[in-house]
Length: 109
Length: 111
Image 1 (tube, rainbow over the protein chains, first blue to last red):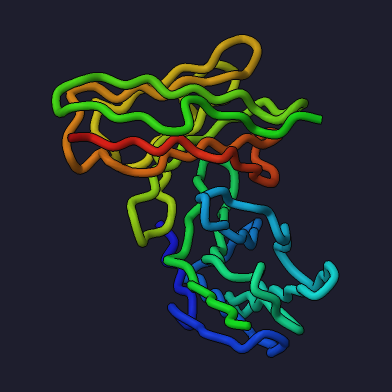
Image 2: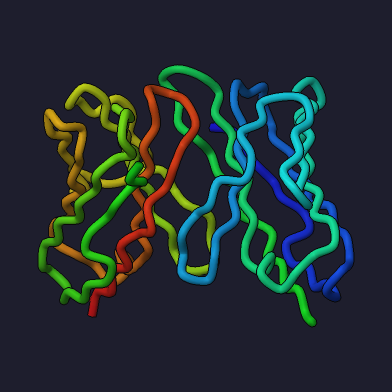
């Protein structure tokens, strides 16, 4: 299978600060998604981004597929951004999505 | 547009019992995947159903089985429960192999 590594594993930010989360993967992939897991356990879709850059409000993501990494940027962080962020990659038909181990983000007021 | 719905949200079982979890996919989706998430870890793929067939399976024992119905809803069955089966069970739906959308999960505790 594909190895997916996320860094940092834990991150504590003051409200209003910016952060960058990284996802490295060990093989070429067809798709990549970023999720935010809220305290109740639900995985919320953030980005579906096999390549390129996308932005959604204070969040943006960039995937460089040829170099096998993706970055998630959070600007002007808010306490509601707290939770665990996962990236998941998929190699193609007949394969599964592989999840990273996550980055646990805590935003303090 | 209803998203992915799972039931029950919480349940408690004892070792050796059997459990059935249910999932209704997002409208228009035809593929359902199940994941197990232990505390502090990322979701682990159990299996995926498409056109009522198990299309892909992760590294889980045969105690884990599933089913997909003609309306694309799905069940996950776990037999002979072990303490280690305690976890959050997540269902995801997609249109074939497209973007995944997750339900809120079923939290299983095995005593």
